[in-house]
Length: 121
Image 1 (cartoon, one colour):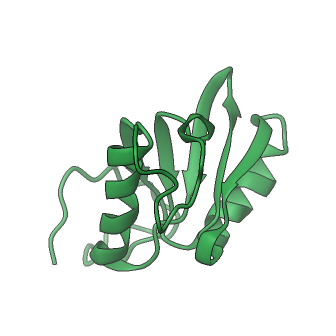
Image 2 (cartoon, helix red, strand yellow):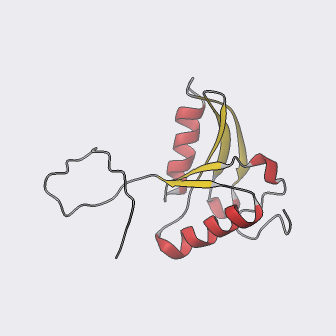
Image 3 (cartoon, rainbow, N blue to C red):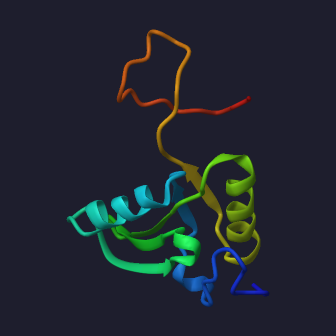
């Protein structure tokens, strides 16, 4: 990879970021996931790879597999910037967007899990 650290992630070592990144919109949710789930037995060996502009990013292990979690910010422009840098400069292969969303469907209840394959606005 080249041109690291990038302006928005500012991680000088691409090896600190896993090939799979979970991305909640809220950077404090990324911090919560790292502190709550990485520290408990689910995820271990936590390393903070970025806190630039308070957009927290952490890497740890889940069942022996490296995984990172990093905030994406609000909206498509913000996740566009972070995902571009992750894919283009840090060797990330998969980003999984996690977090909350609204619904127009009365059949969906609070805390339901929805696996989304497409989105529009």
